[in-house]
Structures are given as structure tokens and as C-alpha cells.
Length: 160
Image 1 (cartoon, rainbow, N blue to C red):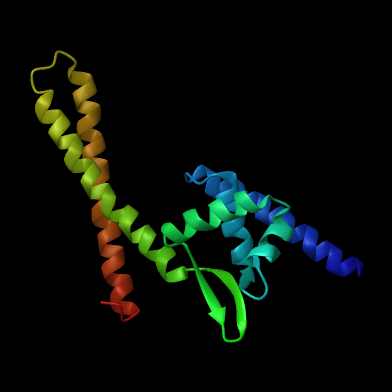
Image 2 (image 1 turned 45 degrees about the horizontal axis):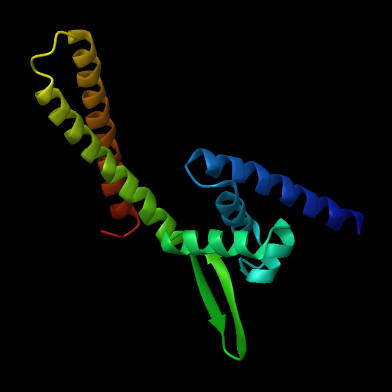
């Protein structure tokens, strides 16, 4: 019994830590905690009430978090024949696709900053423009490196 309680408290602590991490990525604490719990859950799918019970949160908080995560393609639900409940699970493919989308957006950012630089061509604040140019170079180098990584990844994992 004590071993099982220790395992639960470790899981609770990890959910809190992961919740803080996901919050730093822009999720609310509850979004992060739901996502973290589903990553750690055994089995890797849980029904609404199991999530609510573990996180000790209101129905509306859990419902809103699940809706957000489903809309974001980070969580999916599944059903089993003869069981009316929906079970929620991390959508690993969707999560990976979200990361790929964020990588592609870094290219968009450097393009926008280039447009800003064109508008600022007549500025007296050259040092600021130089910093913006450095930001563009950094963004382009990062984007190029990540694009090359994704190409290699896809080739190695037959996802091309």
C-alpha cells in the first residue's frame, strides 16, 4: 500500500512539474496538468472522471482543458464497443505535427521582420535595425537547421 501511495505522489509531483513546463509554453496550468496526466496515465487513455479525480479539479475546468487540447490536436478521444464513455489520450501524431507547424512559423517570423526592416529603412536608430537584422539571420539559420533535421528525420523514419 505504501509503495502504491509513493507511486501516486510521484505521479502527482511529475504532473505538477510538467504542468508548469507546459504553462511556460503558453498553455494554462490546467491544460498542462491534463496533458501531463494523460502522458503518465496507465492505461494511456482515461475517462473524464478519472482525469477529474486525479487532478481534483472541477468538471468545467477539465471539460474546458480537454476541449482546448482536442481542438489543438494534442489530445484525442476514443470509445470502446459497449461502453458509452469517451476515453481521452494524448494524440502523439498531432503533438508532433504541432511541433512541425511551430517550426514552419519561424520562417514566417523572419519574413515579417524583413518587412519591418524595409519600413524602417529611413530610421535614425540604426543600432536597433542592426539588432533586427541579427534576429532575421538567427531565425533563418534556425529555420534552415530545423528544416534539414525534419528532412533527415522523415527519411530515417519513412515519413517522406
